[in-house]
Image 1 (cartoon, helix red, strand yellow):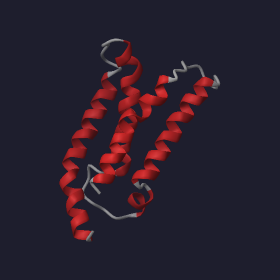
Image 2 (cartoon, one colour; image 1 turned 90 degrees about the vertical axis):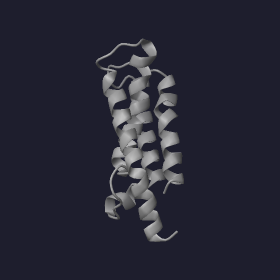
Image 3 (cartoon, helix red, strand yellow; image 1 turned 180 degrees about the vertical axis):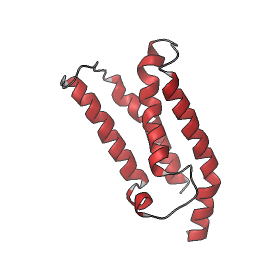
Length: 125
């Protein structure tokens, strides 16, 4: 694919990524202010948080740029870093390295929106 086509595709998709950034951010933050039950309080932030960070780190909501940041944080590398970090937190809870509640369903929650974001990112590059 030509560079101009790649840049154009990226820039056309940027507003949609910006909407995803805002929506996941609002969802994640709203879990601290609202109570819609145990699923909302227990999993929505675990679902929205990694996805919000993915959009932030991948800079998909910005105009195209080719620099060391965007070259380092490829879709796969970004996804693997976030999965490793999130799973590391959950394993630290399992081994009681700090005072928190271990929940094995969190492993699924972390990737439930992160993996679709990765797939969409790869397909829209």
